[in-house]
Length: 256
Image (tube, rainbow, N blue to C red; front, side):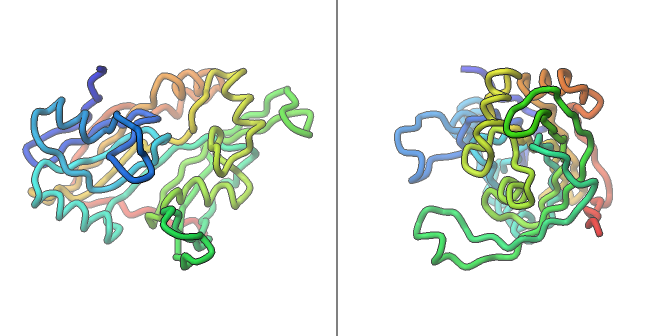
């Protein structure tokens, strides 16, 4: 079994690169599954780990886990109180806006009851187009196909928030079987070698639960997304693994 890529570790927490397709932990919606990030990391480190936030199964990227119950409580509070800065990269259909704040309210999607019975909750995602490409191929009804590289910074933490916000705005993420467009998903899988959801968590910045300094941990993309970026001419936007510590967190700027 391949070891998880550890981006940062100390006696209080560990930050890893979660592979696309790996569940974080056991759940009622994952009956029959045997592979979980929490279990693999526990076996790899030889100690208990505490998840403090979530990433969707098909999403890859940076994820922090606590190594003690006290650190878990503090980190969970930081996520709940929106004191963590998150940065994602997504490949979407169409020519996305240069910058925009998506603030569509979202109903929870936990599978416990019909969505119509779930209350709509405030949700906000800041997006910015980093690059775009037009391919001389007809994927749907248009003679050419446009795609964009989008930076997304969720300011709230609703389930599937980035995926649902971008889809509702008209720029679904490539590879999203639930909220995306199947014809574009197939094109990327069959013609561009990218059969996964093209959404990756590339950075988390948060207050260390013990020392109080802010850690910013950046995560590189996996081979599938890296090769795709090179193919589309977006290699200049590839993130690299890195850790920095600062006295103050940089607050996300909301696009007007």
